[in-house]
Length: 77
Image (cartoon, rainbow, N blue to C red; front, side):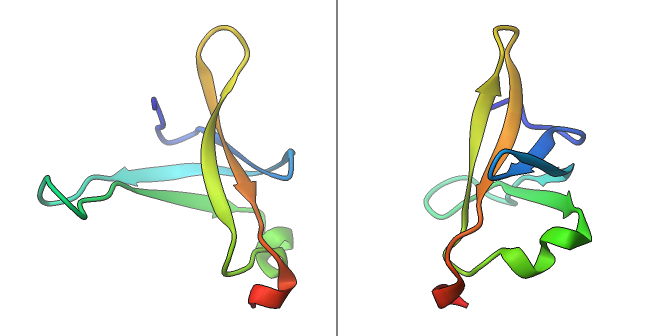
């Protein structure tokens, strides 16, 4: 999805950080997942929960991307 270092990260639509790395698995096949490392502003640290998720979203017509984070719910811890 064209994610690379520098791709913006938003939490509920607010700029919160950026991608700092994309790590590819040592092998292909079932269970092989790409890991995306993010750097977030510390003010969001207490607002991300265990049931949170992230998705890649397009921005604009030129093919830009952003990582959109849904922080989850406080009940999930």
